[in-house]
Length: 142
Image (cartoon, rainbow, N blue to C red):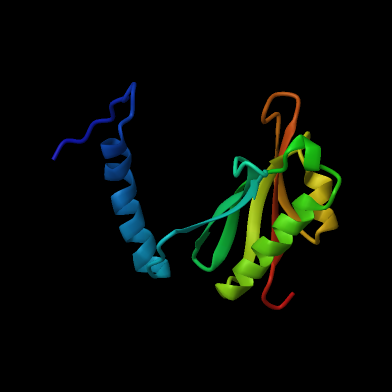
C-alpha cells in the first residue's frame, strides 16, 4: 500500500470525521470510552435574549470550560464568579475529577487564580504580543 499526504484547502466535516474516528478508537483502547457531554449556563435579559454565559463539555471525568462571557453591564458584580461556582457544582454532580480551561492575558487569568485555579502552562505570542494561559482546578482530593 502506498500512502501520500495531500492538503485539503477547504476541510469538510467528512474529512474531519475520517481523521478523528481512528484517533477516538485508539484513545478508547487506552483510556476507555467517553462521550463528550456539552453543558451551558446562560445569562439572559428580561427579553430572554442570551447575553453571555458559560459553555463547556464533560469528557473523561473532566469539565473543560471552552467559553465564558459576562456581558459588559454585569462585570464586577459577581456574575462570572457565580457562573464558575455553578460550573463547579455541576462538575461535582457529574463526579468530575476537575475542571480545566484556557484564557488570554488580556482576559481573566487573575480571575481564575482568585477562584483557586492553578496555572498549567502558557504559550507566548499567542496572539502575537500576548500569552495564552492554561489552568486547572482539581475537585477530587482538593
